Image (cartoon, rainbow, N blue to C red; front, top):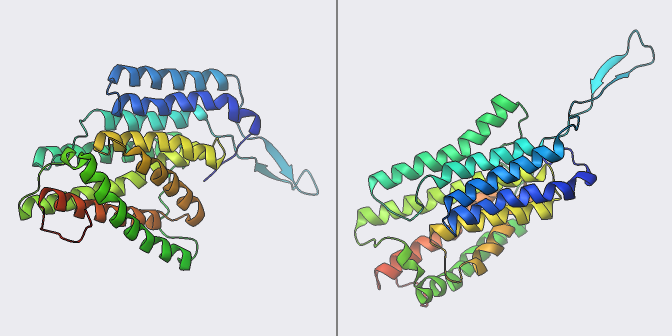
Length: 296
């Protein structure tokens, strides 16, 4: 997945990638759409300028004892930063067309389904069938069974969420960024919505944005860049006030965990456990006494 990297190209390519990722806070934190459009255009344009004239075609060499029987083999071509940043930009543009305020009515849930689904599907389809480079994939299963550390982390996520999230949501008042859920139907809708968005987060931020950036940058740097996009989205979704103190480490950890496990299934499981606590806290905050399992 990491592709072919040339160290000499990392630092010149960092500026365009950073500019494209900076479009996320423009869209989702500052909510200045035109600034996001400009940043995407400048970032992609800068990547094209850096790559112009650079040959991306794989070299063809022969392997064999005799020229007449030698077998032609190809050296994989270098991935295009311009193309990969364009795929990230495509996803960001699709997400940015809808307001991300949490709502539970039918039109809002339909908007979320179409926009978020399109933001994952469109880059994948363009990469797969237009660029034909298979840059995006969704490896569900781990290369090996989950070990004791992985199972322990799942338990730790529940405990940490139970200890931290009620304090954050209630004392900061950010639970009010989510609609009041005071009926079984609304509680069920909230449960579905929180879980669905959590799964989408991993499909887009980890398997799309992170995967594309890893083709050009060291893993740690690519992880920081994807976290900029991840945290910006969560901000507009409702994780405000001092929420980034929680969401920044979470985004970085999800990227790190994916590197260690190579399993979409595992990072989704972690996220859904975290979101299960979020769901419980939101129900508790809007209906004190309904779920008396939290300390706050």
